[in-house]
Image 1 (cartoon, one colour):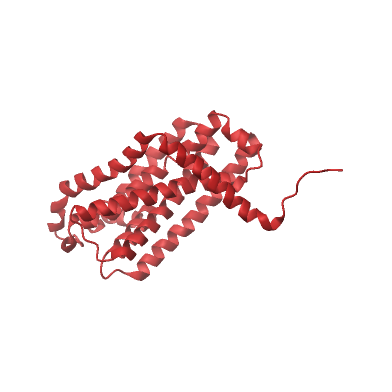
Image 2 (image 1 turned 45 degrees about the vertical axis):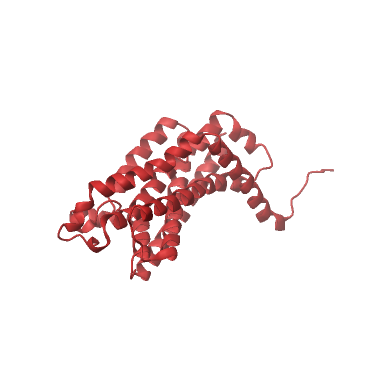
Length: 272
């Protein structure tokens, strides 16, 4: 007669949450033990903010620039927040690759740890980093002279948009890592996608000054959705319908990429 423990159905959601918290804590502790990566992750966006803010500040005087009255630093800050979220999340798959190389992934798969928690933990880890970085960027922008009429609510929407963008590209990065299992391939795909996505958006430049085709492509760019949502929320008066539609598009993208990552995880389990 089998004595295997059968977990009650009602406890499964709690188990997923508990395991996700445990695995997320593991990743955060690993990050804390490598302060160099933490410092670079915080310093780099500040350099972008201050460097680009000074380098391009005169563009507000160009005819057609739609945000001239707010100052370029105010215009740039949401873009830097999303750039930081994009570049950090594009490397999320390296966590899986390291666990695969060290045999940690196989040990987790043979343990009672929830499979859903294994996926949620890496994305939660990236989301927490994004929240911290986004808040620091906004505070430094305020100190540097930027003004955001949207106030605390606008900053909250900015962080939410950044988190959704992080989840989109973390899931995509995880899927690529699980399907290819090669660091070089993940790096190549990340570099191939991140810069075009950044420049095919209004992250650093008003699209009214760009060729028409750039604006047309940007309509389908998740980075642009996040930037527009944040910029509208932090301005006054912001367009609430635009903010809601952009956040909705990002939420749909999270679901699509989450489904892709889930399929990739199942494919890895079958091949392992």
